[in-house]
Image (cartoon, rainbow, N blue to C red):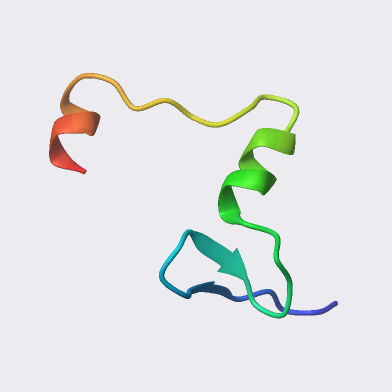
Length: 44
């Protein structure tokens, strides 16, 4: 299995060697992106 690395080239974090962003992966996930609320949002 290939190892994927997330890199930040100044825009949004991307999977190395592609133009796929971490946001693209989260949006495609069946549950969708996690939402931070309450104390989680304040500590991030």
